Structures are given as structure tokens and as C-alpha cells.
Length: 372
Image 1 (tube, rainbow, N blue to C red):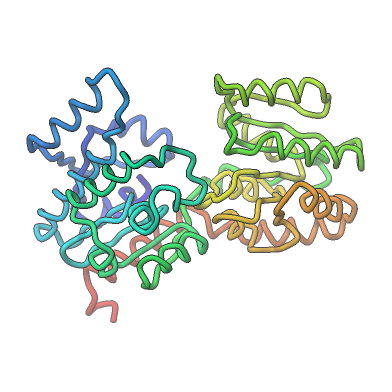
Image 2 (image 1 turned 90 degrees about the vertical axis):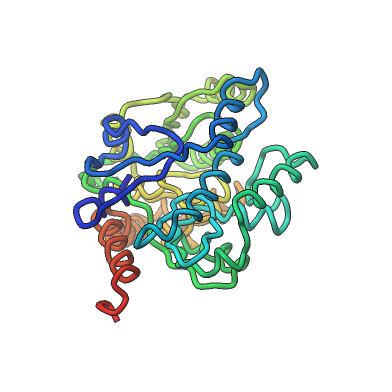
């Protein structure tokens, strides 16, 4: 949505998609004002059949990748009708140069080592899916050589390194935007000596591990507490988290909350903790920084970019997280140093920065002589 908003005033933008987007709802969710964009949907029989199968069959056979492969094939076929084609999902094997914003190089990783090659992947890795993925690559016309000829963008240095390992080509980092202006960043002295954690109660979020870090820190300083903000899932893991929290009066499960309350909760506290591993970027970590907190993040994925790869804020396990957090909690001058450093870096994630970078890159591609 932010790319559409960035380009709609300067270019004739056409969105190629398999669905009919509700721009009213999407604008509300993303804080954008997209309006002057035309919609085109592939109408061939194969696409209609794939959509029917995905919605009508009594079992979940996961044909989303098949639908996307058909869309990618269609995009390749119509590419020459446009001055520039921009992709914002998986890698596409375009016939000629395009602009691709890759959140994670899914197709390349799967081709290299199967689904288990995707960092943090928790889904099915059976032989049936190997056949399915291979079929999707054939239909879409995917190849590493075709992807390599495009100009590639991504969301973090970590993801850029993944892409460069697969495609052996330079990848530019353009950080995803957050609503920086929503945060007011109250004075440090007005904040509580506690932590916020944002994410649904599911295993990949590592909620229990993070609470165990707080348990140790609470023993060190009984002002330390944590607010876990996010919806409960109907799973055994959610039940475990609830039971663990119920036995500790310094652990608050706030559940899902509206945007205003989320921002307020972030700005009320000095610290944040993020447990998920192999995040492609880590939007909630960027929001913690925009809200003035000092977040501690796992040593994996793009979230380390957000804390400027500062080793004082990066941990591998519970013990390391505890020791590093203790140093910060026990040193007010270090708190001020880190908070100032992070706050001064938050402009990297503003909508204005993102959209201007996109406009500059698109201009370079459409008018190469002008920008030489």
C-alpha cells in the first residue's frame, strides 16, 4: 500500500492481483490514502480453476502458491506493456529487468534446499510439497538467472545477505515503514521500569522464554514486570503461557488491544523484549524504538538491524538476555545513551523516508539517462 501511495501521483499505476482489494479498509489498516490506482486481474481458465479449488474443496490443500505462480506467469507475459513492473512478494522470473521488493527469498531458498531451508519454517516439508513447489516454479517460469537480472530490494541487511547468497547479486535495503509520527516519546523518568512484548500467544513468538528472562530480572529488581500484548490462540501453548503467567503477579497478559492503547503501553515502559527468531524485519521492534523503549532482541533475523546491531541489546539465550538486561537496568547513564542512540535512528523507518526512497528508485529505472 505504501508503494502504491508513493507512486500514484506521479505515474499511471496499475495493480495486478488475483483479488479485488477493499482500499477503504486497507487504507485504514496501513494509514495510507491510495485512491488513483487501476485494478487488473488475470481471467484465464487456469486461474479460475485454482481459485475454485482453493475455496471449494473440502480439504485444505494450500493452492495459494499455485495461484501466485499463475499470477507471476501472467505478469511475465504482459511485462512489455508497461514501463516498469514492480513485484512486492516472492521472487519472479521476469523476462527482462524489473523491480522486486523481496521480503524473504522463498522461491530461491526452496529451490536450494526445500522448505526446511527457509529460516524458522515450521510447516510441512513432505515429498508431496517438494513436487508441488517444483511444479509451481515451472508454471511461473522461475529461475535464478531471471531473478538476478532484476533490481532487488529488501527489508533488512539479514535478508539482503540471504538473497545475495542465493542470487549472487547486489540487493538494496529499503526499510519497511512504520507510523513514526504516532509516537510522542515521553521523558525517560516518567516511564515504568518494566518490559513490553508484542505478539500473539504462539510458539514461534517464544513468549515463555521471554517471560523466563523477566522472571530472573524480577528477582534482581522487583520493579521489573512485563506486559504481553497480543491475542490468545486456541492452542496448548497459549494455555501454558496463561498458566505460567497466572502464577507470577509481575506478568500481565493484556490480550489484543487497539492502536491507541498499544502505543500508550509502549510509551509507559523503559524496555522491550522480542523473542521471535529469524524475523525478516521486525515491525514491532521498530515501533518499540519509535515509542522510546530499549528493546532486547534475539540474535537472528532482521531485528538486529533495528537495534543497530548493538551487541548490548542482542541475545542468544535466556542467560545472555538476563545478563545484558541487568547491565542496562543497573546503569542509568547507559539507559540514556542507548535510548538516545535508538531514538535518533528511528527516522530510517518513517513512511516519508520509505516512500521517497521508492520514488527515487523508480525514477532511476524509468529515466536512467536523467538520473545518470
